[in-house]
Image 1 (cartoon, helix red, strand yellow):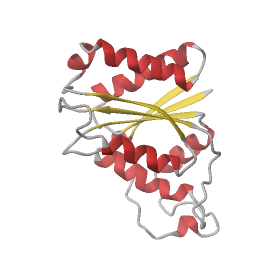
Image 2 (cartoon, rainbow, N blue to C red):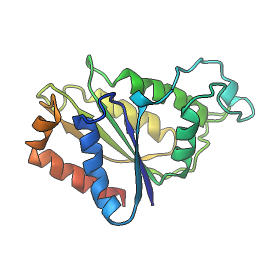
Image 3 (cartoon, rainbow, N blue to C red):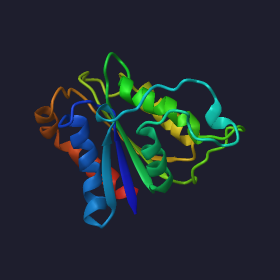
Image 4 (cartoon, rainbow, N blue to C red):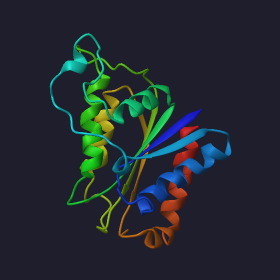
Length: 184
């Protein structure tokens, strides 16, 4: 089994990464191959909207790190998408990644990757209300369902401004471990 994490935070050691790692603990302990990709450290440029990728199932004209992520998503059994909330929404890094997933559909909008892969969504936010930014995980799940992924769960860690605050929330950490079990 292969599980990849897509980290939409530029903060390498931040709470979003920690929460993704917590979700991956159980699968990794059971032998799953796991890897986290930090979008903030990768060369991923914006979608040009040129549509070349949809013509005869051609590759994206951009020659950047998204090519690696396309292959990883094709071969992974599950994906964890994590983002902190910045200015009321997912980070720009994650939005750019999502825009570039346009190339994972053919000219008829059919997915070019095998269907049935599992999707988990991890959100960290400073706001104390769990449903305050509910549209963000809803949108992420909606987009990836269109690519054939099956949403199996989500976690929203609230009142989190740093990893220390996350570590004090034992309920969220337990939810992360339970979500990891569902990825198996």
